[in-house]
Image (cartoon, rainbow, N blue to C red; front, side, top):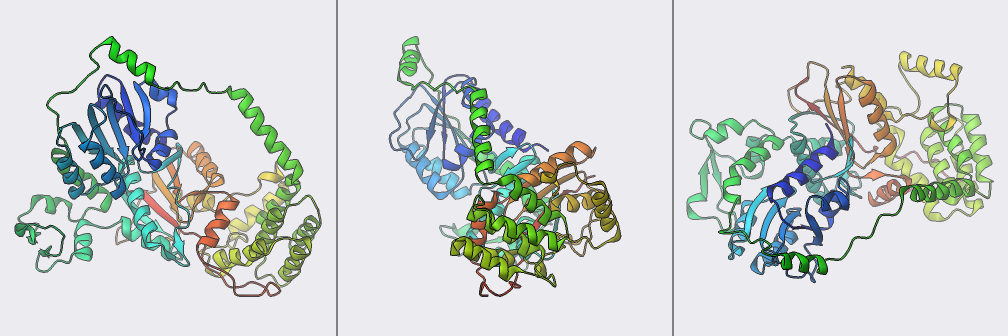
Length: 542
C-alpha cells in the first residue's frame, strides 16, 4: 500500500485519458495541495500540462487551443463554478474528475449546462486526501471535535475522505476501533455501513418499500420504490457490502451517464497557434539549488536549537516520557524553568508532560510548577493549556497507560533497557502506536480494548493495516510505521489522521475542542477526557 503512488496514478490517468496536445490543469484550493504533494511542476510540464489554474479565479483568459483537465472536490461551490465554466467555456474540451462521490443531481446539472458539448468525460477519481509520504496521509482537518463529540460537518467530511482512501487503495476492511473512544466508534459506524443499513437508517424500509416522496424534485414514478433481493439483482449483490464497496459499484453504474463525448475535438491547428500560446504563457521560475536550500534550513534549525536550549529541553522531555524517576524529573523540570533561554512555550510543554505522567503520583508537585511558570512570566494562555491538556488526555479516560507498563513482559523489557542504557538520549521515546501495532501484527491486540465493528473477526494475522488517528497523527508515528514496514516481512501499514500535528497545532486542537479546566492553577488537575482514539482498518484477506 502506497498512498503517494495511488494519488499519482489517478493524476497520470487523467492526463493520459485526455490524449496528446497542450493542456491546462484546473483545480480548487484543496486539490491543488493534493496534486502538489505528489508531482512537481516540472514533472507535470513533461506531460504537456502547461498551465495551472484555480476554478475560482475570475481572470482566466480564453484559450481555445488548450484542453482542460478539471480535478475538483465535489462541493456545491465547485459544481456551481463548473456550471458557469461550461456555459461560457474558455477551453476547447473538458475532462472533469471529482475527487470523491458526486451526486446524480449534480451530474445532471453539469450535463444541462454543457450546451456547447465541450465535456468529454466526467469521472470520480478518489484522490481526496493529502499523501504526505508513501505510508502517511492527512486530511488536513483541524478542530474535528467539539468537546467530547465530533463536529457534525467534520465527521461527514472525514467519513467521505476516509472512504476515498479505501477506494483508492482498493481495500474492503474489517474495522477495529479503540473502545474508550466514542469518536472512534462513531467514525467506524459511519464508514462501515452496509447498503441495506444505510438505506434503513437514512430513508427507512417498510416491507421492502422506500418512501422518497420528500426528496426535492423527485418524479412521480420514484416517490415510492421497492428494494427486494428477490427481484433486484444489483440490490441482491450489494445489500451486505460496506460503504467503500458500494461507492465503487455505484461509480460503475454511473459511468455511462457521466460520460459525454463532444461532436469534435478542437486542436491547435497551426504553428502560429502554438507560438501564440507559448508567447502568452508565463515562464516558470527555475528552482533554486537543493544544496543551498538545505544548508539554509539546517542553519536555521541549528540557530533555534541553540537559542532555545532545545537539546537540554529535549533530553528532559525524553526522560518525562520514558522514565519513571519522579524525583529526578521534577528536579530537572524546575531547573529548566529557571533557565532564561527556555521560552514560555517550551516551559509550558515541560510542565504539560509532567502533569500527564505524574498526574496521580503521591508526591505530585504540579501546583508548585504552575507557580514557577507564573514567576517565569509565562502567559496565562500557556498556563491554562497545562490543565486543558490533562483534561483532554488525562489518565482516567486513556484506554491504556502511556507511561507505566503493567504486564510482566513490558516491565522486564523496560528494566533491561534501563540496564543497557540507550544509544541516544534524544530518541528514547517510542510512540504508543508502536506497541499497538506490534500487538495487532502478532494477533495479540485485546478485543476488549479494540473491538471489531460487527460480528466478523479476523482469524489470521493481518497483512494490510490502515491506521487512522482522530485528532491527528505525528511524524514520529509515521517513522514508527516506516520502520515496521521495513522490518516486518509480509505486513503493509499506512497511517493517516485528520491532520498531521506538531506541538503547536496539537494544542490548537485541544483549544478547538472547547475543553477548559475549571480547576484553579493552584490545585492539582485531575479531570480528564480521552486522548484521540485510533480507528483501525484491517484488510479482510491475510
